[in-house]
Image 1: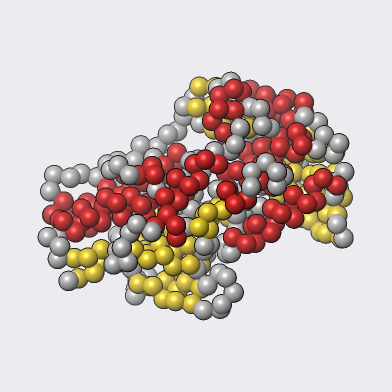
Image 2: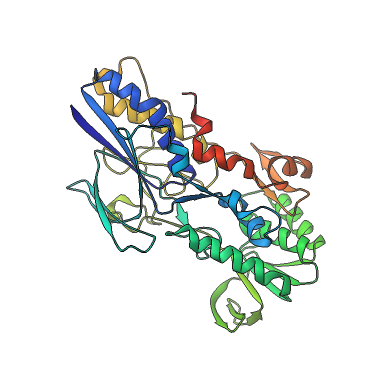
Length: 391
């Protein structure tokens, strides 16, 4: 019996969802379509042994008493216990190099053993996501680094007199809300890096966010960016774009993300380093047999809906491509991207600002959706693939 190797690189929200859907629905359908003449095996490569529910990072970093880190980091292997070894393997490691001709990827261990492994693929799905400068949000490598950074921040915050947060997007604004609530005695400044907060939302919502963080004692400064930082002892000196400097007890970098694509051929990437998707309906990648989903993909606008809404269309496209004439009447489900204003931003534990499908929502709705617990209850279901039990 022939074996077709499906390789998914990345095991955060996009990779986990895609892996579960393929294993539950697409792989069995492909084997039926081939009259069981081909076995399909899926290998999931994860840089971390544990899934990190990074949606909740602003609250995790603020205090150990609000949400235990044991709920934020969940073993990935536990979510895949129900699949047989003939069809699934979890490999812990970080992709280092890719050989386009041989269709192989070298993966190195991220937990200190120094070992590496070469994996072959027939179909490749890139779900490597993105990383931040600060380990508080996410970085390639061991989850232990992020846990250590969160604990260090939790320990330092109660004694901090001055706090500077760089980044006026959701992460920075949410962090300002959390810290303003918990540490009213501290002098907290939020640098938006633009002319307003939350630039993906209409100006009125950004202004409302600024008013809410101001009510919590946070000063917002616009049109000012961080150029460099240096640490001395327990303090950090931040050089700013206007030529001035500030020395603070705590500096939190929430300034954005970069795609995890350093191991990929340059001709597979956009000018900004994201994986080329030839169209936004099929999610086919730069060449045949390669696909991309989530933050790493060129189609993505960076929101959660660009992951959740893309899993089924991607997997249906893979089925059609691999089944070929045996696909019968099955057609690929097109991905329909949500382009209307949609973003929910908690500002403290009691509410916040946001918009859903173009409708501005009241603070109570923000509380119901996200502010009360940063959706921590969804983390176990993400690891287990609960959203994709049904085809």
